[in-house]
Every structure is written in C-alpha cells, then in structure tokens.
Length: 362
Ligand SMILES: O=c1[nH]cnc2c1ncn2[C@@H]1O[C@H](CO)[C@@H](O)[C@H]1O
Ligand SMILES: [Zn+2]
Image 1: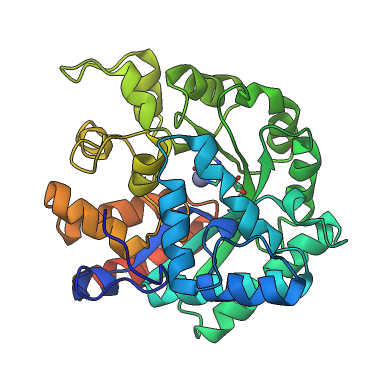
Image 2: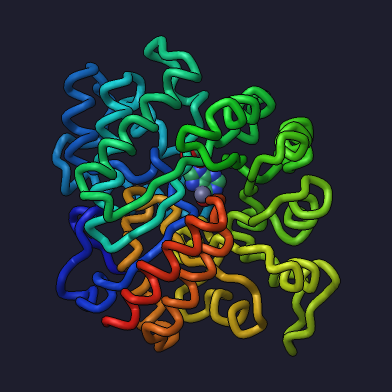
C-alpha cells in the first residue's frame, strides 16, 4: 500500500495532477481519524499527554497507518485513543477542524461531511453543546481560510457500544441549522447491532433529520438489513459486505436489490477496508462490481491519518486497480452530492457550478 509521510499532502510522484485538480466530495471522513501528525505532537505537549508512540510527526503518521493495518476493526479503532486524547479543549477542536477543512480543500475536495463523536471530547470539561460549537467554529474558520473553496458540514456520531445515542440524536436536531447535517453510529460492529440505537433513529425520523449508519464492514448482510429495514438508514457507511447477498453470477438477493433499487448510497472506503480486513486488496475490492451492478457508489477516505490516505490517493488506487478515468470520478462525485445531507438547491449548485465545470476543464 502506498503511504505518504504527511497524509495531508499526497505524494506528488504517485498522484497525477488531474486527480488532484478534480473536484471531489467526501461523505465519510472522521474528524478524529484525520489530524495532522504535527498537530497531534504539538497538542500532546501542550496538554501533557505522554502516551504517544513517538513525537516525530513523520514517524507518527507511519505508526498510525501500520497500527491500524491489523485486519481487525477493533484493533483499527484502538489507535483513536491517541487522537481523542488531544481533542479535549475548545482551542484544540477549533484548530483541528480548521486544519481539516484546509487539508481537504488543498486536495480538491469541494464538499465534505465530517463526522465525530461528541461524547469522546468531554474529558476536559466541555459540554456536548460546547464540543459541537467548537467544531463548527473551526470549520467556518477553515472555510474562510480557503476562500470558500470548500463547504463543510458535520455528522454527529453516537458510539455503538455506549448508551448515549438518543442524546446525540437530540444534539443533532438542536444544531441542525448550524452546520450539523446529520447523525451516524460508529465503533465496533460485532456485538453492537444498529437496532440497539433504535430510539435515536426514531427520534431523528420524527424530526425529519438525516442519518447514516456504519454497517456491513465487520459484520455481513444481516447488519446491513437491520440498518436499512429496521433502522431506516438513508445511506450505509461502508456497506461492502452487501456482496454476501449477491451470487457469483451477479444475481442480486432481495436485500441487495432493495439497496440498489432505492439508490441507497454506499459510502465506500477502500483503503480502510483493506486495513480492517473487509477486503483483501484493491483489485478484488467489490467497489467495481457494485458499480457495474448499478449501486449508488461514493468514494471516501474514512480516516485520512489512520488509513494513511487522501481522496486523491483513493482515486489513484482506483485508477491503478480498475483503470478508471475522470468520467468515473465525476460519477462518484455527483453520486456523493446526490446523497449528501444538504438541501437540494445547494447540492444542485455544487454539481452545476463546481463539479461539472471542474471535470469539463480537466
Ligand atoms: O470505519 C470505521 N468503522 C467503525 N467505527 C469507526 C470507523 N472509523 C472510525 N470509527 C470510530 O468512529 C469514532 C468517531 O469518529 C472514532 O473515534 C472511531 O472509534
Ligand atoms: Zn467510518
């Protein structure tokens, strides 16, 4: 797997210039999985966090990618203890969100939905509301610094193994007019099925609020079935194990048909899938088969630091594995905007005024 020293900056030798310039949209990217390594080191010094595996930013980037490259989602998630440890003050959250917007914009991302779990940022005494306001302030600052080249919205994540999801769903509704676009659940999938959080999803439905669910990453089709049919999710985080319901000859089972026919977007994150064992290698990753079968596919990073990737690098991997040209990335980008938790006129404006002209100019 390719790796650049600073995940914020794709290695020039491997990422073609047209890929970098292509307008991109990312729906699945975790704030606490995408910090700049140098920022982690600085913040750790400031807050007295001494458990970092190294204080050298380049080594730290490599450490995250390697530690997460374990074949297990649970071990992949253990690395987040180090990022969350330095994300406990308003100043840290504002800085990290602003830098996130800058890094994405530098990579050609024009629209991003960034998710994080507010409940993981309370150790320094912030309230849930203060966490959300700090992150939103950071993103507004980041958008300003990029001259408005990027639009960022957040998704508030409830952790699957805790019992705060209804509270986080309420928090989502409370901040929906201030940069929060929706809700998600994340964390270890095994033993924590989405229906445990049904009260949260029902609250969001009643409030006409958007949500997505991580499903079909570590557990197969039954987890996707529950997320779609019991919990009523609009999109699926990962969802690659929908292939459990597709026969070798490409015949779709009932669930796979339902997901495809209802245009339920899959937030596909190839590099992350290789690390957690959800896929073997890029060439055999189901993204291409699912695309050919007509699923609504979006391409995403999941965690830029932890997975040692960027949107440009994900594009490059798809070029290398499947020979995709700009027309496929335009399709993925438009699909992401069609599935974005943004009002329709804003989505249309981004497609018509930014994405289509950007691809036409490549
Ligand atoms: O791919 C993933 N699957 C499940 N959970 C994840 C993934 N990536 C990150 N997180 C979890 O989401 C939390 C909030 O952002 C992170 O702290 C991490 O525990
Ligand atoms: Zn994720």
